[in-house]
Length: 303
Image (cartoon, rainbow, N blue to C red; front, side, top):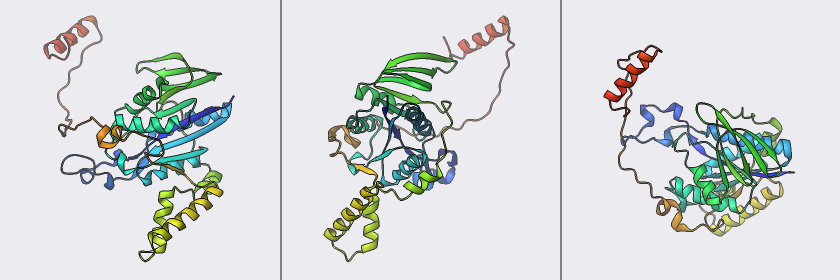
């Protein structure tokens, strides 16, 4: 049987390239100064979904929420084998924290009623690992975190999940949401034929921007809208139009979106400098372990 799979992906700043120039005076990341990349573990989530389709059939739909620039990761997903790409973009979604983001994504995913939803374990710009679990709760799907291996038998999923110091095997009924570890697989590279086919795929917002540049300031808004609609229809006929939804399209309650739906408040930003210091070695003996525990208790680390 074929499965309908949805993968949530995110475009993030490349935090490996953070330098003093890439930080603002208040200690936050200057995202504009950093290259944008495909969130690494979202690539593992995409690969997990593609393997399900390769083995059982079905479809893989990729969803990204963000600015129009997020179309870059959607096109990359098409290059790697995704069947459909959806951009959720709306100014009213700005300043969404993980709670608002998971709500908006849940509204979109409900329109697709997938059997399986895949998310990367966490995004490297926040490292919260909250969106996947929150999304599962809002969808009413079973949540399985830290996926490393997945087998499907009808409506049952058998999963090997990483628990830090080992692994455990669990079973779940579908539909289910999985957060995927970087150790789960090796993401396939973009395929040349798929790149040639999908490199011109565009979302309506990108087409509108191109039309605005081509027609110039002298053209009326009506003329630009008509030309944009014409080009979108052409792209749709060629199956190159990236689906674009706003908050109205997914019937989202605005009270749960953007700043209004985001209870997270940043109290303080603190720069922490890790510096090397003294260290002490303890022998792997009962006396050594007792000495270690004694020092940890004395240091109020434990106890």
